[in-house]
Length: 179
Image (tube, rainbow, N blue to C red; front, side):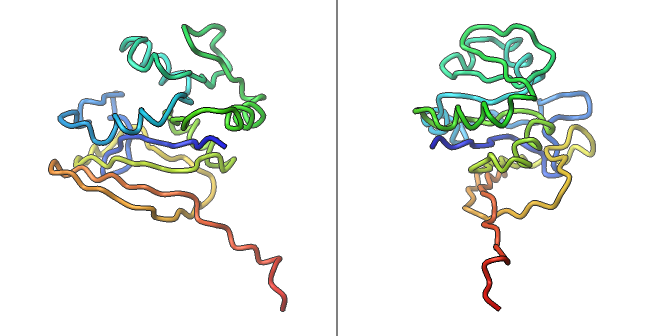
């Protein structure tokens, strides 16, 4: 089964955008592992806003990736893209994950990420923590319930950026205990 990997930049205080939607705080002086990451991915799950940002930046930017856009408002998408409606979320994600292919990059806003967390549909979290405190902006997580994660590793860079890797913590099944 294909892996869904959340890979995002965030500020030290947990924001993925500044207060005005800006990304100018993200370090771009090094590759930070993106080339290897993209070599192992052939699809991307993203929300409508992220899709629109990527299309405005240049549709060819991630043109080699099949794009799955989660939106109930878009009626058309460009190129190698497909719209997934909220009502079809769980079924389509499962179908796509069972298709042959590489990893699927989860790149979206907090609402989309929260939906994937609630459905336990993320295999790995790669969080690139940039050495900046924004004070305000768009938070990475807006989850309803506490979610325990298991640490997989980290990498630090000369710029102060730290890349953290996690997965969901295995759940302990109390029903299996013979008392």
